[in-house]
Image (cartoon, rainbow, N blue to C red):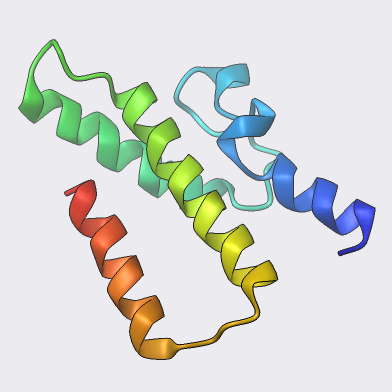
Length: 97
């Protein structure tokens, strides 16, 4: 992967500090700002149901870390088993319902 593509990819995720710069709201210059807003809003709403011990920022970061890991593994893994990919994606979603 070309270094500028890699940097652009990594800067789109939580690990690059995108959410930390503005609390829980995605930075307006993020290429995936709308998607991040949907994800962030989901975890904030979930926090309202879960009570004071639930940390929506930490949960959002964990979710994005898992998604980033899955994406990188998919890119470099070379395997393209659609059925297996669907199972993994459904499992990730299930973990954060």
